[in-house]
Length: 223
Ligand SMILES: [Zn+2]
Image (cartoon, rainbow, N blue to C red):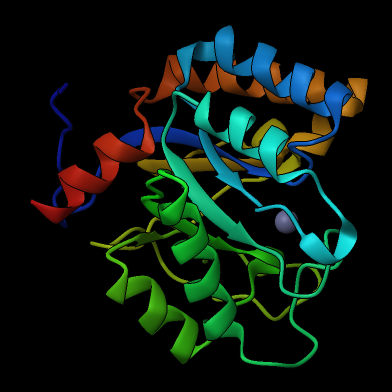
């Protein structure tokens, strides 16, 4: 494992990238995501935070599992509480759904190490479920969300790796913090402009910060 420099205040100087994988079952999106993982701009080992199949929407479990098992990158759960296209909860017990999805993943031989709440939703009970499952939480940002409602923190800490940049923010960034965590959605890859901005941004970022992955940064922080 490469050495990760700790900064003066116990932080890390590193850049990571992760993807909210919304449409693992969409052949076009999946092909684009797979190409990105196989030949990642800047050499990033991009974390895959994957939304499990939604049985109410009739999503194909077997194909989902086949694709999820083929992911050879840091792997995490990305819960959508309401539906494939509606991430945030509209009722029910959000923490119970997280526990159910984790149990389902594990019962199928998948070992998520990360959690990212859909629509950046989190609450005390969800955070407790994530901590009990010994997952690293990615459900926070270091910037306020345009639509509000997320959890905003100053930076990474043991057990929490917030996102610091969207694709657009990375493209516009002049200065960068020590720790940079770029997040995007697999569906961004459908848009040529966004896809190019992501590739360009990651290549440029790789020149400015040590390129690491979620596994490396989370274990460096927990030491
Ligand atoms: Zn999502």
